Image (cartoon, rainbow, N blue to C red; front, side, top):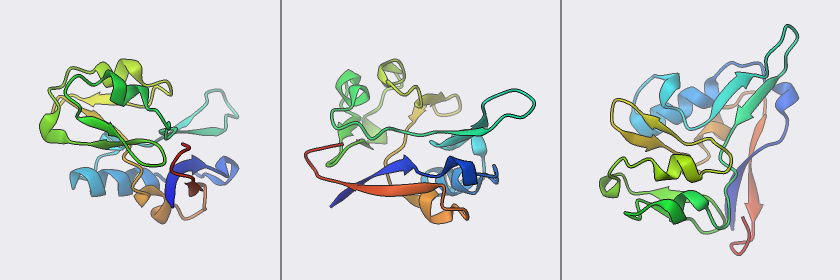
Length: 139
């Protein structure tokens, strides 16, 4: 059964960034928070709470529909698969993302996009994130 990334318990988040570091290590082989597809941030203010900006795992992802080179393709159950070699850096996916979580990597001129691998979930010490099962017809 397919799974998509969900934020289940944001109140447990302590902004340790383990999820972000795991993402960037897995996808880029680097140790840079800037290259993580998941972003943990403050909501602002003196007593702010945290927010997790994550891919919604859309069943019919607008980012994939917007990609003229088919570098982003719908994934069974929701979200996308990313074929880096097909991407020309046009950034159409950034504009199309309804969650506003895709952004461009200025070094590579390629999108930083979640591929629903679940690495962030495995490294979150406080069980904030979860890979939620979905029927492959949903997302």
